[in-house]
Image 1 (cartoon, rainbow, N blue to C red):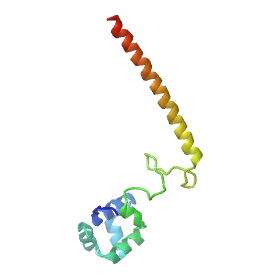
Image 2 (image 1 turned 180 degrees about the vertical axis):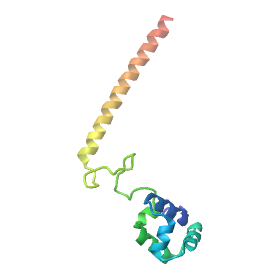
Image 3 (image 1 turned 90 degrees about the vertical axis):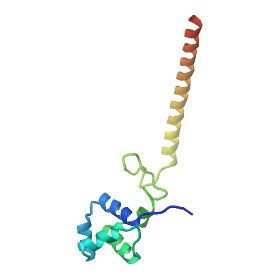
Image 4 (image 1 turned 180 degrees about the horizontal axis):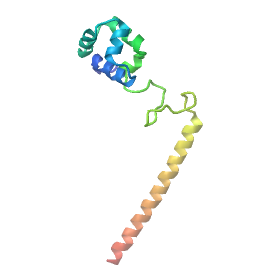
Amino acid sequence: MLDKEIDIGQRIKDLLYEKKVSQSELSVKIGRHVQSLNKSLAGNTMKVDLLLEIMNVADIKSWEIFQDGAPTGVVQTGNGNVAGNGNKVTMAAMESDLASCREKVLLLEQLLAEKERVIQLLEKNQ
């Protein structure tokens, strides 16, 4: 079980910003005064019915509230794009990436060994 506190109001504000939904636009869609919505979002607790209404109107998924990033099983690249074929990463792609990384490590190890050899030769000549 995770032992993590979530400031639900701030998390909703962050998600609204990411989805380009303003608080005033949201307040109109859920039929509340913007001041009432702002007050609800300013607190770190929220009534479940309001939370569900906000999630429905702003198309916020539950995992978005309780996790930072993508749901388990989805791989995100550094630029925010989802990698994989239909959001599924194949073993072949992973094995190819792993093989490429192993080759790079091997080359770097060889380069390091050569540099060490050169350093030892230079130290002997001094």
